[in-house]
Length: 136
Image (tube, rainbow, N blue to C red):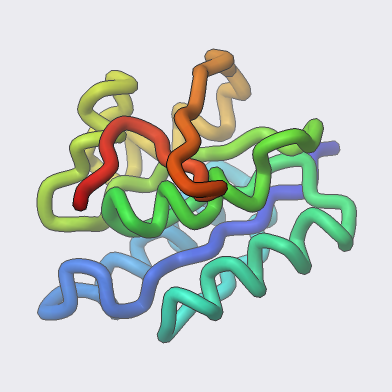
């Protein structure tokens, strides 16, 4: 049984954040999958929760938020055997779109549960990992 931890940005798409976080929990529960839900209030919380999930033996850490949240979780997971799940909860969701992840939370959860993976390259600028874009 895989241990799934969802690190959700509680301020992503802020006008609907609470409803979307509840939708994530409900979507996993509806599929009979126990997923631990961590709601981050800051960027530091995102990385702290992701690091704790790795240390606690999670096999999947799902990043729920926009591109910044996806990048923060990916930065923690690079070099580990932990799989990253993508829960597109941001405004633009460029990374999720680039990866072909469904933008509907229920379908994104189904994708994580299905367990299909794709190995991707990441970039590094000034010792910081990035996924699909970096800005100056």
